[in-house]
Structures are given as C-alpha cells and as structure tokens.
Image (cartoon, rainbow, N blue to C red; front, side, top):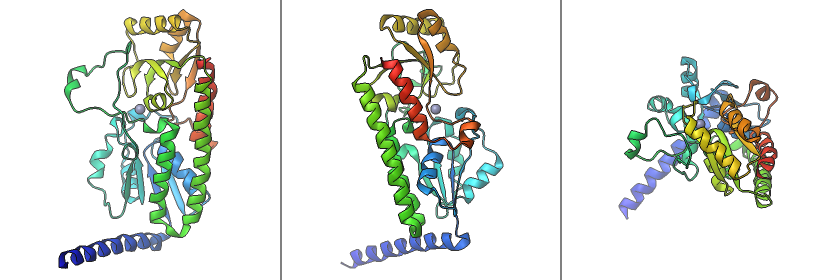
Length: 317
Ligand SMILES: [Zn+2]
C-alpha cells in the first residue's frame, strides 16, 4: 500500500512539473515557437495554429530545395534548441538530427518524430527497379520508409496527434487549435474520399514513375501497384538501360497513359520512357518540399494532393 502511495506521489509530482513547465513557457514571453525540419510537419502545424499570432511556425528547409541534400546551419541548430516544439521526420534524409537530439533539453523542447506517429512499412524494392548501391548491406536492420506523410490517411493521424501536443503546451488556446484541426482534418478526409473514388472507378490500378518512388504509403493505402526506377530515398539519378527498358516494356504492355516524375526532379528518365511509348509525362508531388512561389502563396498539403488527384485520374484511365 505504501509503495502504491509513493508511486502516486511521484506521478503527481511529475504531472505537476509538466504543468509548471507548460505554464512557465507561456509566462516567459507568451509565445510558442514550432520548428520543423521539412514541409509536411510545417504544413500540419501551420494549419492547427492558424490565426494565432503568438505562435511562430518555421520550416528549416528552404522552399524549392532538395530535402535529401539538406545541411543545417548553426542558426538552424540554435533554432531547434530554442524551440518549444521541434517536428522532424526521422528517416535517412534527416539523420543529421540524431546528433542534435542528444543535446536538446527535452524539458524545454517537445520533440515530435513523424515516423513514430503512424504504422511503418519497409522501403521496398519492386520488380524492374535499379539495384541499390548498398545492396551488400541488405542483411542489416530493416530500413523503414520515411515518407509517412505521403498518404492522406497518415496525414489525418499525424494532424490529430500533433494537435494534442500543441494543446498540451498551450491549454489557453485549446478551442482555437481544436477547431482549426477539425477543419483541416475534414479537408484531408475529403481528399482521402476523392482518391478512393478515383481508384474505385479507374480502368487500371497501376502507376509508373520514371523517378524515385517516395509514395509507398500512398500506393499501399489506395491499393495501387507501382513500378519505378528507384526506391523512395535513393540518391541515384541515372538509371541503367536495363531499368529503362523494363519500364518502357511495362508501359507498352499495360498500355499505361502517363509516366510520372516527382517535383524538383529533371524528369529525364520519365521523358526517355515517354518518347519510346507515347505516354504523357506528368508531375506527381510527394510534398517533401514546395517551390518558393507556392510557399509564398501559402500552398498547403491539401492543395498539393488536389493537384495529385487530377494527374492520378489521368494516369489510371
Ligand atoms: Zn525522401
């Protein structure tokens, strides 16, 4: 009984500490700062905190730049350490964050790893894909696919969980955050329903990417079969003639009308495949990042998915 009492006391003290820390934060300067490593976390946090001037949401990745080549500046590291909430993906492309995390004061900064918020799948190597350069190390621990945000179903889960984190640090504005969040979630749900509808009514359930394929979560959630030149996080840009020939034959055999490339890519492989097959080349956005112009215009993840629905419709019919 005594022991139970002790545990209870410790728990109450811990809850008290969390509460006090939470209050202190608001007393300090009355403002919350959310730092995100890339666009998806930025978009979800921005949607939840919309119209609250006491919150700063900042993305470290520069609009228009490649997430996989990102190098943090000393200011970025300072920003992370001084933030109230730090959101990152947690995969290969932001591995640099692991070193910084050891030096973060977790009492001051709440760290949110997107890959911890949803069920993960392993990065996959499908038929016809370029062999991986580090294939020798294949027996190592499984490499989970980091592109969790690419499925709108995951985006809904992430937004719900992120809302709880933000509310936990700023109870006073709970109603604003919850209202914003449920509005954004209903937009995401409508996107999800529309994709389901497009796939259900489509002639085919197969997509071809003359590019990397960071959309495994998307393809899995909507039961789409995919072919691509490289897996999601591959650093390769030059495909062998064997890979290109495989994709050309696949497009011809299955009469695929559209070959995709992803944003911020030169689309070279997709164009080569298209030339040999008369397929059309279109861009499918993986939402790693957006252009400066779109960033300035306030383009959201929902807008990006709206564009994707249009091109998907064309590719499946
Ligand atoms: Zn990636």
